Image 1: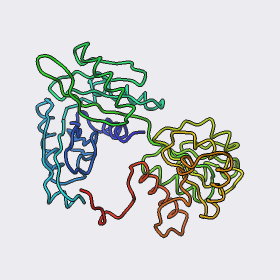
Image 2 (image 1 turned 180 degrees about the vertical axis):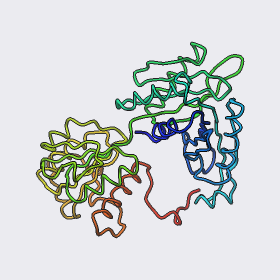
Image 3 (image 1 turned 180 degrees about the horizontal axis):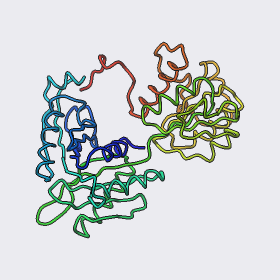
Image 4 (image 1 turned 135 degrees about the horizontal axis):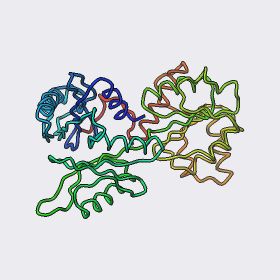
Length: 361
């Protein structure tokens, strides 16, 4: 379940009214991306952050309390000073824009309650959806589903059509951002918040490395799927945190699974007869990361075999073997940590170098 829905669910048990602060725009170097949230409850509970702490978060809390008192939304622009940026591990400061709006959790007809209930239902079915929120004092909301269906309105048919088109583009990009929509006499700025199923880690092989992989992945918010042909290994006792345990011929199961640019595939069976057929399948998919446990020699032998089978080097380069970052791992848990660190680096397009050696701002 998305962190947003988890936070909202927790707040509904303890708070009647909350202020939801959303990071809607950034400029320069900032620690969080558009869509980051902080919740401030009427009863004093605070969840989340828009900057990982610091003066900006403190100001957002203060402004959120004012929004709860007035019940009117507010848009803020704040600078992240160089000193605060340094404290947060950044080389220099940036600016952030935050939109704060009140939500009545006791009222099922509250616009944002209805929006998130609708989106949560879609996400739980594996489908992305977009919440479109005008950055002004209005209760108008629009939800755009993956198939183009719209729920709600921004108050104008032309606005709804343009928002629908832009939302579908952002679903493909998997990015949330503030966009300007055409409106007379003045344009409308709206925040397009893209929600989708959580990233998925598919693990082929239920051995000793797979167990800490599942545990660590769950802590990172990944959906976890474990595949193995051995019922005595793929058990709930060994994998209490796994979302799915699939028992059967791995290559056949691999052909039935869904793969997106947010899917990580890890092969830890360490068995040629399982790994090669699975690789032939997953190399054709949109999975963002494919890694295989094994030595450099074993990995090269498998790559050579697949090349002889007619698989091109452009696809073979997608296989990370030996798997993981070199962190000096010895234990299964350390190996799992190195694997997930590499997977995250690949998805983010980052090299995995120490932060102190990072040259860019």
